[in-house]
Length: 390
Image (cartoon, rainbow, N blue to C red; front, side):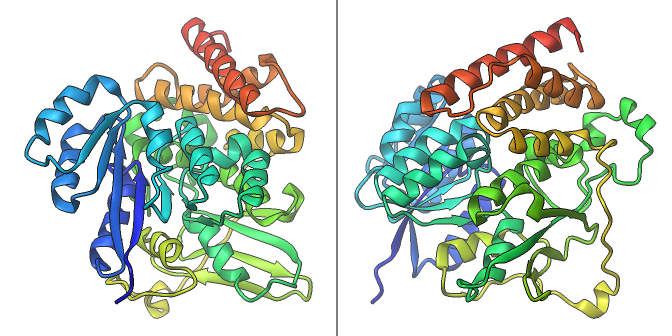
């Protein structure tokens, strides 16, 4: 009988985490949950613990520790921890085979580094890890001989298109984007859009933070940076295509002109499962793609004036150093501010651009520089929001 792979899920209560648990439940003969973590969703974390009986759970926000301990009093075999340090330590546990990093934001960087150093395979859904510290992460992955398998639908599609093409260089990556809810909206109307408008994504069901990033297209900008590190290409080799149908999840063009793409319905369980099972393809109880029903597949150039965040991300990766870290920190601040009605939709890009100008630049950052950069950029962006000085 095949030994079950032990999976740690960082961010089990989010969109990726909950769908990963569906995949694990469907293949309970192959996978077992070793650890579940969340930031604030105590009730859901408790429900997941009762359903999957992991060895441990971690609540990152220590203020919720007592409440979680009380809820889980009837599960004495499940260890309960709290705090950022506990996240770093739990991923190093010997039984763990793979760590699915589904946390949102800069907070996912440290536990991912600890998991790599503990030689755990990484299923990467936390895009900020490579956006902030791509060079460092790849150096560590090479040093500790750790595989990084992409979970983002676009990067999974590229990865799948590259299987069997080891000796064939990439000419171009075609990174698709839905275009978000404001694709057809005139630029002048964006000043009045609300968070409710921005949260109505046309094709994907995601958490609030990533849905807002999709609306600004900063999410696609981050994916460009991820693709550079994951696939060893330059920004000039990455072309973003707005593809409203979200059927072609991304493609690779080779030197002979051939293009290989991965197609499917918009269902994140597929790339999650592929990361867990690679190189095997397991059955998945999902809707199948019917190209007769799809009929039309459209592709458009992104409007970099209307979606300025995408242009800022390209600017950041060309600048290099800690500039992507600056952009990520500022973006996390303005994203939260927009969700809390403290800044307008166009102001998000304005504040990020101004933070890029004001924050200290380092051409060769190490981990400590990334940490300090993150703090400084957040402080600058927060001040700009409070002063409305943009």
